[in-house]
Amino acid sequence: MTANTFIHQQASHCESGVMSALVRHYGQLRGLPFSEPMAFGLASTLAFAYLPFIRIYSLPLVSYRMPPKTIIRGLQKPLGFRMRTETFRRPEDGARRLDELLDAGKVVGLQVSVFWLPFMPRDFRFHFNAHNLLAYGRDAASGDYLLSDPVMEELVRCAPADLAKARFARGMLAPKGLLYYPETAPREPDWNKVIPAAIKKTARVMLHTPLPLIGVKGIAWVGRAFQRLPVATDPQASKLYMGHLVRMQEEIGTGGGGFRFMYAAFLEEAASLARRPALAELAGELTEIGDYWREFALAAARMIRDRDPLDVGRLAELLRAQAAREKAFFTALGKAARS
Image (cartoon, rainbow, N blue to C red; front, side):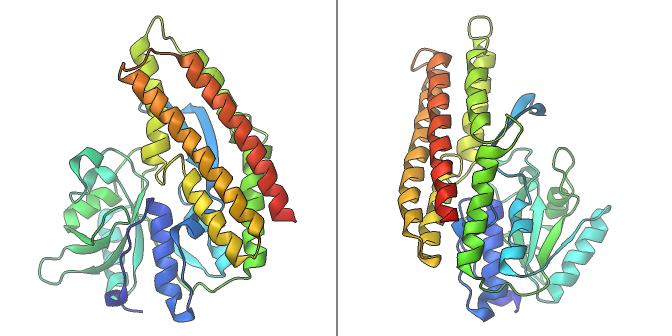
C-alpha cells in the first residue's frame, strides 16, 4: 500500500478519525469499510470520569471518554491485527524513524501538541498534547511533511521544525514523539461476537466501576460538586468551573454531547452488522440523552455570559437527572448486548 493511495476524510474526533482512516487504508485490500463511530464504539471508548485530583489549568479533569490511546490499543483484538507503537527520547531520532517509514510507503499515526501546528486556526491552538493525525508522505522539494489531520477539511502540510515541536512538546500527556502504524492488515471480524463484547464493556464501565467518580456515579458526583461552588463569594471562579465542564463536553468531547451522538451512530451501525434491531432503538434514546447534555451546556453558557441568573442548583439538578437517564440507558444497553 503506497502513500499516494491514501484518502483523507474529515472526522469529528482526532483519535477515532485517525484509527478509522488507518483501518480503511491498511484493510482496504480485504474489503473492510470502517467508519469513525465504529472505531469509537468497537474500542469501548465512551465513558464519564470526574477526577479532581488531576488538574488541567488548575481545574479538575473531566472526561466523557476513556483515556487517550484507548482506540489505538482497543481495535487490535476485535479486528485481528497488530499495531506497532514507538516513542523516542530525541527529536532527531523521531524524525529519522518517521522518514524511514514514509520512504517505505507507510501511512503513520502521530501524537502531537495542537499548540505547535501552524495549519490550525489560531483560536484552536492551545496546549493539548494528545492530538492525533496521520503522516502519509513528504514533499521532495520543500521537505514539508504531508499530513492528514482528521479535524481539517483538506490535507495539510507542516515544516519539519514545526512538526518536531508538536511531536516533542512537554507537559501533561507529553507525546514523546509517539508514532504508530499497523504491522498486519485489519480483517473483518465476526460482528456478532465483537459488537456485543464491546457494548458490554462500555456498560460495565458506566455502571459498575467501583470508583464513585466514574460512570453514572461520577455524573451524579459532579452534580453535588456544583452545589458546593462558591457562587456568593467567588462567582468568577464558579463560572470558570462551569465553563471548563462545558468545554470538555463540547470541544474536547467532540462529536457533540460528550461523544453521546457518536456512540449513538455506532449503535445504529452495530444494529445492522450484528442483526440486533434493539440497538437501533437504543441509539435513538442515546441521541435524546445527547440532546439533554446540550441543554445542560446551553444553560451553563447562558449563566456564564450573564444572560441568565447564576443558578448552580438548576445545573446540579440537570446533572442528577442526566445521571438517572444514563443509568437506565446503560442498564438496557447491557441487557440488549447479552440477549
